[in-house]
Image 1 (tube, rainbow, N blue to C red):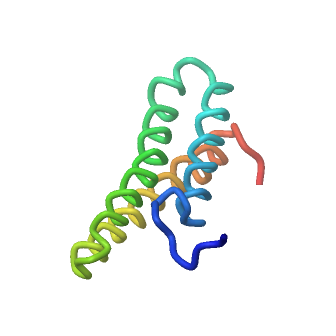
Image 2 (cartoon, rainbow, N blue to C red; image 1 turned 45 degrees about the vertical axis):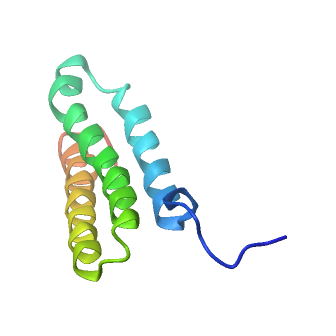
Length: 98
């Protein structure tokens, strides 16, 4: 019997997409040279995982509009950080091609 409502943050499309992205960031980070793994990769991994964690927290705060929106703003900021680290810097440093 199908449900008409979501019961967990893990069912959210945005969470699933963020989780998949975090796993891709981690997999790619393992291919970087050692010096980049300790600097750039660790920050990329932290920020991508933070997107998932903050989405889970936002889900828990969904009953309180202001707290929910504030947490979603944090999600957006972490996602922008991940995008900057994973895309812009890696392309600029020559590890990824456009």
